Image 1 (cartoon, rainbow, N blue to C red):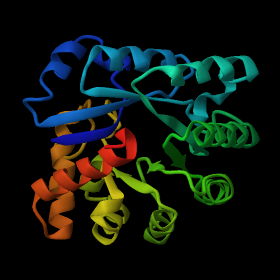
Image 2: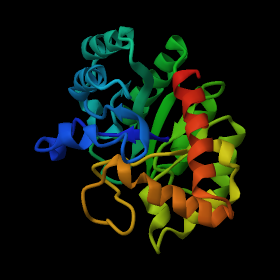
Image 3: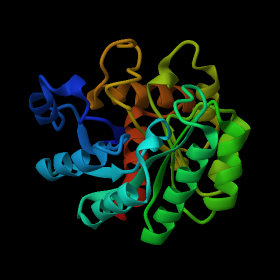
Image 4: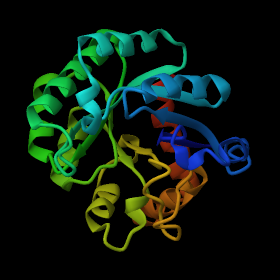
Length: 254
C-alpha cells in the first residue's frame, strides 16, 4: 500500500469533501498518511484529524514562514501535543528564503529549537528548505547529526542529496518528479538508493502530471511512484513496497 509521508488534509481546500476523499483512500491503494502541521494553530488540528482516521498519523511543528507565532509560551504549549499517541514526527520545520516571511535569524533560531526538541523526544524530523540550501545544510550538520527524518519536497542538487543520505536522512519525492522541468529531481530519484526515498504529496499542493495546477490528494501519488519506477527501471509495485517499508520503519518504528 502507498504511504504518503506528507499531506495537509487540515487545509481549507478539503473542507467540502474531506470525509469522502479520505474514505476513498483504501480503494485507491493508499494505506497510510502522515498529516503535517505548518502553522502554530495546525499543531492542534492535525492530531485531531489523526485520531479520527485509523490510517492517519500526525507531525507537529511550525513551518519557517510561521515561526513569528512562536515564543516560549506557545512553544511549551506546542510541545504538549507530543504526548498524544499518534504524533510521530516533528515537522514541518526548516528555512524558507523564497517567501522570506520571517527574518532569517528568527527562522534559524526556531529551526534549531525544533531540531533540539526532536532529539529530546527521540522523534524523526520533516525538513522544509526552500532557497536556503547552504544555511539548511550548515544547521543540519551542526544540529541534525544523529537525528533521522525526511528532507521534504527535495529541490536541491544530487551532490547535496547524497550528503543528506550519508547523514542518514530520507529524501521526500513528490509531484515535481513528474514535471518536464523537474530534471534535477529526476536525476536525484534515479541516482540515490530506493531505500533512502519516501513518497509524499504535500497535498493540496504540488499535484503531479497529469493533474499539475489542480488540487492534489494522496491517490495521485501513484504517478510519482510510476515516474520513479521508470527512472530506475523497476516496477511501480517495487517502488511502492520499498518506500512504504522505508516510511514505516522511519515514522512508525515498524
